[in-house]
Amino acid sequence: MRLNKLIIIILASLMLQTSILKASDECFEGVSRSIFKFNMGFDKAILKPVSNAYNKLPEPIKNGTGNFTSNIATLLSIPNFVLQGNFKGAGDATGSFLINSTFGVLGFGNPAGAMGLNVQKEDVGQTLGTYGVKSGCFFVLPILGPTTARDAIGLIADSYVDPFSIATWREKDFLGASGNKIDFVAVKSANAIDFRGDNMKNFDSLEKNSLDLYSSMKSIYLQSRLKKIQNSDELSEDDWGNLDN
Image (cartoon, one colour):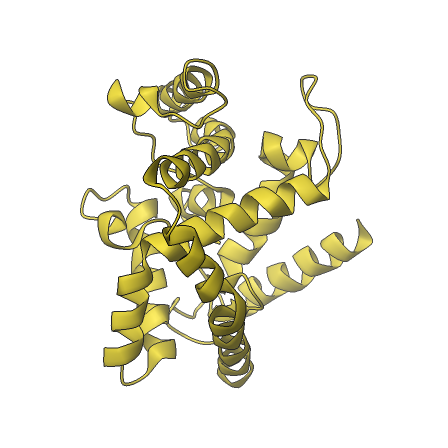
């Protein structure tokens, strides 16, 4: 608890100190590039091979895994839609989660999507953005990847408003549901593997054709976050899936 508060204070101070900076500006580029290099090593040694094996699974298993993790992610969208004053979005997200969790067999199916309930994922970082909070400077986190000062604070805040995080990472009973940190890590890992597997060609192409892979990934991340905050229909999720942390 004390560590989380310390991190929040540090990031809040960072945001205040860099309030005049754009998202394209760096907090500490040298450190971020070193962390990015570590992340790429982790990807090549572990994440990419596991994702390649995942891609060889039967399509029903892959689709079911993607649907399951996406359905759980919808839980975070509900309180954020409320905080944004978007009560229709909150209602759609709630309906999607309930339909998929019941008729979709715990979320492995996606009947809500077939009914037109395709809910955009929302998080605290996006909510802060809708209130006009600037992104602050850009940096890279170990394993979690690219972020900004605002989105890093949002990432911590997510664990306080996301019912799934409350019941697992914080190990607190939420409406009769409970879990542990292993459940949280397992679902987040499955989501990362599903995302990496779906975007195998995109990553390979980007790595092959980029003169500076770090700058290319930075640009893609920042554009993705901006369009999500603006709820832009031009968001390239069809090409890259969910680039959020």
